Length: 258
Image 1 (cartoon, rainbow, N blue to C red):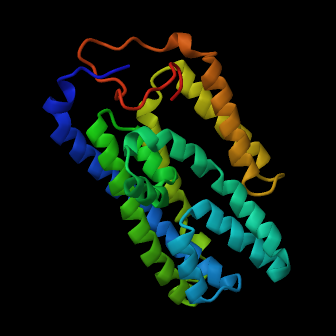
Image 2 (cartoon, rainbow, N blue to C red):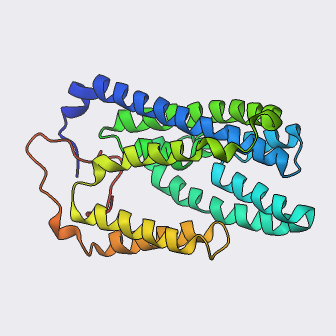
Image 3 (tube, one colour):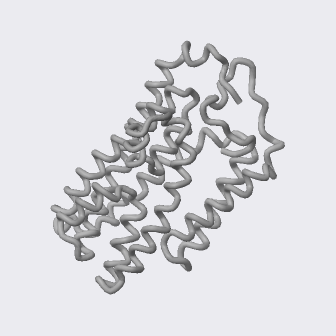
């Protein structure tokens, strides 16, 4: 649904500040988790240089953890499985790229730069905004903020791994999950988004212990897409009030999908 034509002009500054605050908050929470990756990567057999290069070039936390987790368990002999696991988790970024294409806009160099920053967090922060300007700002602030913070914290974790001990004991992984929940919560205003979120979470929780890394996330995403595409529970969606901002007209959405 398109925005009121005057909404962007009247609220662009406020919406932009909100997007910036959310982007920086998510960047801070996610970057802290990079310490865990740096420490775990070194503990799995990678040196500091290899760990940092992986964060600089790969830059997708889930895939990075999947890679070092498999290598740490099976050594170099498990490199093929590690690459497969990381690749499965990386597939989701293709869907993110398609979703964010209208937000990023045209231009080869703009799209090439955006490809490096199209991750879970930048997509989530962007799509949580209500205006075109705020969505664009949220994407870039979050993506660049996490890229800088993640690589700095990766270096710190790799250098201080022995001092830190087991990084999982600090619960830094919960910070990123909490940031995602904070972004998701305001969107749970109707039956359809609630059903999609709960169904995807249940599927991922059940399948994570029994499937290789990457597959539970993809299957959970398929569940969300199927429920949203057929709009099985969209009838309970509340009507948009007069003057209430809806979705930006640069990112068309199918009714009932979050």
